[in-house]
Amino acid sequence: MYRIILLALIATGCVSMPPADPAAALLEATPRHVEWIQIDRGDRTLVAYVTWPEVSEKAPAVLLIHENLGLTEFERSVADRLSENGFIVIAPDMLSGMAPGGGRASDFPSLDAAREAIGKLPREQVMADLDAAADYVLALPASNGTLSVAGYCWGGARTWEFANRRAGLDAAYPFYGTGPQESSGVAGITAPVHGFYGGDDARVNATIPRTEELMRAAGKFFNPVLYEGAGHAFMRSGAMPDASPANREAWEKAWSRWLSLLRE
Image (cartoon, rainbow, N blue to C red):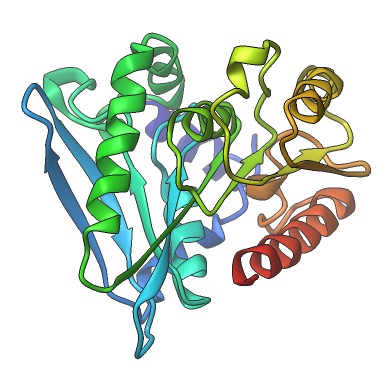
């Protein structure tokens, strides 16, 4: 119904056609092998999207955690770009089985409904799903046995939690996700953490000083970078045709920094 009303308003000139999302076109045209897989966790089935690089040797892996909207074309396009640069990527749909009728993120009637469901996920279920996705990708014959974790917004906060839970990670890359505010939230972290933040995102950025203090006191590495003028979710909005100059610049700089760090 919403789509019908929107199309009618566009036809009458009441509203403008929204800019096309480049993620969809990228996913349709990718030359790389991609697949949807299912991981049997006993009490539930976790659906995940896996992308593969075109390389001759075993590759490092990245566990990618989506925003609070569920797994969308945005994260899938990020996975494809990472694979273009030599990485196997697994992006689990944390809303697997949670949509009406037992569906996943794309089966919710709206993004707002998916957002509401994300907020109700049990923490232990989320961490167990991430463990299962990590175990799956590391067990692939084409994996070289190294794993990094990255996430956006809700997934950025979960990146911190997963890094605190799982030893042996190569690195953690939280994008504009709130960081730990208690020492227990950093005690288990063994990997270096590289943060990416929009300069105009006070809600998230207000948590950074305390996180820095905790990481420093625990002798852990944390390097947060703020991109001036960029807002929250600039990795999504910065890729859009109508991106603001600040968001576009932050998107470009963050991608350059991220790929450089991943290759180290």
